Image 1: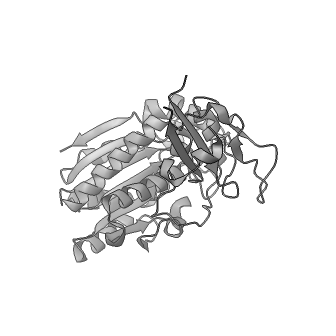
Image 2: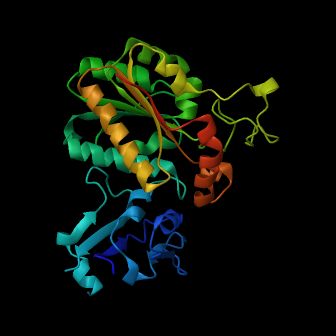
Length: 75
Length: 253
């Protein structure tokens, strides 16, 4: 079992759907949405939120600084 | 555990650096510039230097860098960023002064300014974004374009008889005595991003300690110019750019 549980919040209006966070995610939590934002980009979102471990890999590689990461340690 | 319990300021592990403002960046999706801007913002925040940093914006895609990082900026004529940085650092020696330049700016039109600023050992940091192409003007061949690499002005790939070999600026600059730190990094993976952050931090510290010129080359992608997806660009960069521009420190004094 994972010792950490995380969550990411994507600023969907700033996301350009470049897919780099999806590639970087080690637990395949993120995916591009089928919906588009106001600029027409298919933004990134948590498709599989149960698996998130809060490693912040997605946020580190995000070129548009639109990912915020939260993490809690499970007792 | 419920997701709304996790999303709580007490559990925050990563957020956009405070030094960056909320202006949406004009870069293409997946552009390496954004990651490097973010790293600069994080480092300046960590060093608590936001009020004491003067950066020099180049001509090229990063010309609007002054819209994204909330520090003092000057915008130089094309390629002249190291000359302007020299003036700023000499007039205000207590400031952190760095230039942010692409390969068209630093390795083509600004070659003379770059080499002479480094040779004089000006106490500035130079961040050199090398994507092997002129991104802003439409993907033309740059001095750093790889042999055989297609661009809008080398549709059959770069050839030695007409265009010569790729110019390895960082190796050239490492020969100069005024230069104290030369490194080549990338931002395609989490590990690479962390190494680049350390390298830029070291370059900034060298500038503040008046040790000489520091150069951090960041081998980057230009997915629009290369006509690939951002993820494919990263793979292409690892496969093709890294053999010509290998990662690591070239000089550390």
